[in-house]
Amino acid sequence: MHRRDFIARSAVALGMAAFGKYGFISPRTAAAAQENPFSNQLYIPPLLEKSGVSTDISPLSLVVQKGQHEFFSNGLTDTLGYNGSILGPTIRVRNKENVRLQVQNSIDQITTVHWHGLHVPAQWDGGPHQVIEPGEVWKPDFTINQQAATLWYHPHAMGLTGEHVYRGLAGLFIIEDEISDTLALPRNYGVDDIPLIIQDRRFFEDRSFAYVRSMHDIMHGVLGNFLLVNGGLKPYAELPRGIARFRLLNGSNSSIYRFYFSDDQPFHVIASDGGFLSTPVGVQELILSAGERAEILFDSGALSPGDRLRLLVDQYSGNTYEAMELRISDKRAEQQEVVSRLREQSRLDESSADRTRNFAMETMSPGGRGMGMMGGNRLAINGKKMDMTRIDVTMPLGSTEIWEVENRSATMMQLPHSMHLHDVQFNILDRNGQFPDPIEAGRKDTVLLWPNDKVRLIAQFLDYTGIYMFHCHMLEHEDDGMMGQFEVVG
Image 1 (spheres, rainbow, N blue to C red):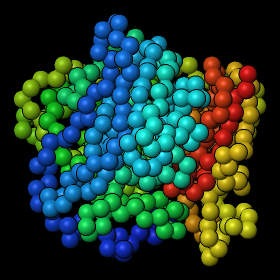
Image 2 (image 1 turned 45 degrees about the horizontal axis):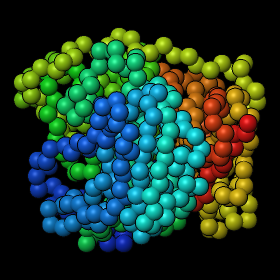
Image 3 (image 1 turned 120 degrees about the vertical axis):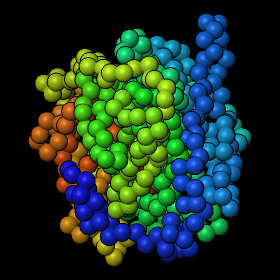
């Protein structure tokens, strides 16, 4: 899909949200947001990891807390964060490492912490069953059992996920392993290995977050008209000349983003949700839906010290943002060439599947399936809303399954959806009968489905038994009930 088609499709699908309603700030009238664009340096979330001492068994500490953050120069916004006012530290671990955490809930609502993309026992998954009450402490304790990847963590309490993420609760979770150690990749965190959490937000005129869940917002997602990068508006970052690595997270509630650089500068995708691709894929643009991640390499070797370029983001609402400015310094990067090989892929073969299941992502009216434009639209999977007391799918431990997922969009409202599975990484067998694009050929835990798309996934359910979630990762869809539960039984 070309950039012009992406924007045209978004305008048709959404009909454009009226951001001027409800007293929202518009970028045109919020002069403070435009006074000094690219004047603040990109915020790099601090690392949270073991000390490196072999005898260190102290838990990693996360505190869910209230705060205030200055997005605009003339006012503060009430926020939520982990160990700070907004977002959270980047947790970095190694494969086979035992990880002990202590999560304290110091806000006045229940919450959870879900390790998105992590293969972990069900009791530590952090879904809606693992509620942390106000004032309580949750102490997950698990061993990392998967390859190097860029994952993330966020709240997952029933009906509160969208609001809590919107107010600031999100952070990266990085796994390293023996293969990532050997690759000639940038690895100086915050210098040439840079985390980028991209989120859109809208604000009321008093600078508070405008998290309004009207029917339009439930159906299309709470879409913002300001773009944040690591919690800031239009930051800049200095890059050494050579190869830089960006770990991209679409941390939005519901937006789909297209990423590209000014002047259509090329870059290489080296990893998707669950880890490295087999070889870098050269592109000029990249689409990520909410919850998806990618690692990319950008080569500034042909640029000169002092040169500047922009990371640009098209939003599925039709907005285009200059997200951040990259400034080329006179320092030389440690890596000067794009690595040629990454990791051998062992894709699951469909002949190994024990069974195939079918899932329809659909809109239903209160009276049943189908579109109900005037009857209060609701979102469901296979005609069912989420029910914490119901198990939708049961599979034996060790089984391999194909999930055929279809976005059954109604003619009158073409809504995109996505499918996220907890606990497992999957392979995409095909999209609309075609072998997946090279960027989607690696390990995935979240997949975008455009209207009327049909995607076949294959996954193995290994190591752990218990109850996990599957759902649309457009958080307003999830909170409205577009979610189900699968149970792995021994």
